[in-house]
Length: 220
Image 1 (cartoon, helix red, strand yellow):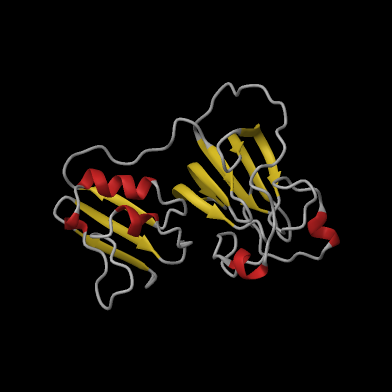
Image 2 (cartoon, one colour; image 1 turned 30 degrees about the horizontal axis):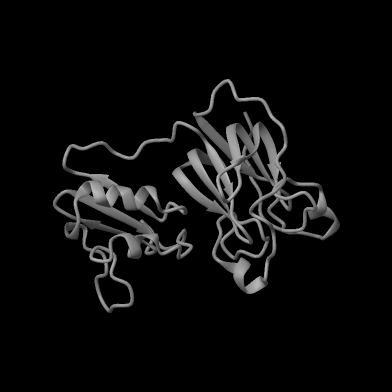
């Protein structure tokens, strides 16, 4: 296990925290400050300071997937959503909620993926959009689309070398306020930060010389 991953066992649940994925949304420290103790020296996670159910709610509300909770009390675990979504954050990343396979690896059901092109932890967001002054609406224009025959299931995401995020599977792309932008089963999403039709790719990565590692495996 990486040194960036911390697992803390409690009586009713275990909390897994991966600092590489954290975007400091602070939903954990605001929802359960007795569990997640910000700005202290030493151990800062106390799973026994809240119920397993409350801990699970925190995990579900963590957009990056940095926090995961495994219940030990026999209660229901976090599952995949009934509707796959990719939320477009104002001046920020893409927040994915689905059963995600990223570059051939299952990574859970939540992730925040860089769309400014500046992250040092691509394809994940690391907050670089703030320092870079990235500007991109979280309310892109709605494209008329028919309801999907299926709305859940595996969502595969591939990072194209020096190019976009290739997304395959049923997903609703939604605005920051929650309304549907588009329903797709196959899409290329901008991750260079330069597209003129964000969140979708328009080929700008080639014109602007965007460089980033890409998927090297085989596509289905």
